[in-house]
Image (tube, rainbow, N blue to C red; front, side):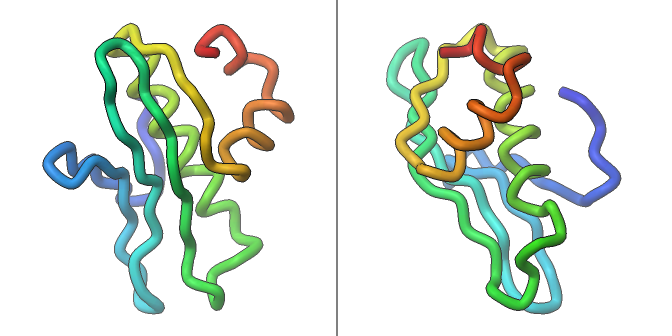
Length: 93
């Protein structure tokens, strides 16, 4: 996984990547079904919007999926939009 300057933590027991902020918890939630990672939800506290935190969480999750040899099914609209904007992630679909 690529190192992030942000303290993003993978919590597999909770099926999410998270970032603890003073304003609350930012997270990218997934479900793993065999070799498919269903990316279901991305959330950032409203006061933290526009800082690229959601993108960092999604990038971290996608890097992990690639390392694990998983395919990705973006069920979250933010993840789907991120993958459209970043063609280098399309091999995960």
